[in-house]
Length: 272
Image 1 (tube, rainbow, N blue to C red):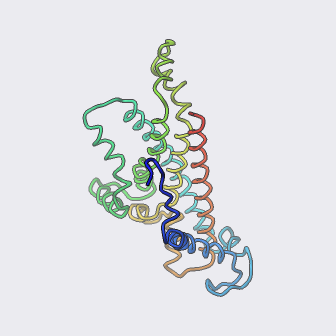
Image 2: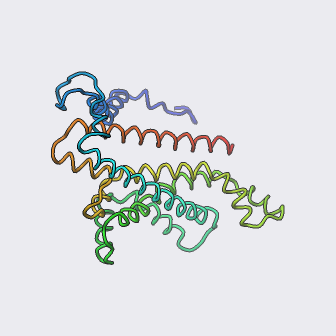
Image 3: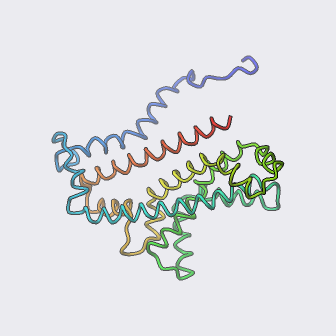
């Protein structure tokens, strides 16, 4: 092989069928749920024609009040958790990347990244034990606190990636022009970081909105979010309205992830 020549993995034997198999395993269940959410039949197996009756049932059916309350809880918790985690992640990114070398820097980075590597069930159990040990009542607030902590590394990644792409010469030029450090941060660095901050906020929001495992452990009695409400309904049997609700959540997730991707991408282009 010639030096510097890149290898095209698409030419490897079996690459294409393995890729198709992986895509089918990942997305076929989602597609099936989306298709059958438009099924007119009460059966989740037999096709009875195209209808929007189950989407109407989500908003006006017997369980609509429960779903609306759960949706409100999910939305408010996700917004507050995303705001708080993004603020903390922004401060952490500035300290880690612009703070220079300091003792324990590698340890701090490991602690920030730890929730990404630890299985979520372990985090959920540890959080539950911690709340029980300090006598923290489980409910709306416990979900919010757990989500803030869990979302910090997800918000940190795009913010840190954005900040690493910003050269320090911009801040140095502002300081040379007699700006204070606060002015250099708010008027120079912050606008340049904004695409990464928005991307981190959106990612943290969708992580919080879709979380089930941690929420199910720390939510306590009498409080539900959309994922836990869906799980509670599924335990009584899978109904077509659950497929419609799941499809709506999936579409919301796709929209936010897509917006986060393009915001981060536009920020990268503008810095070049």
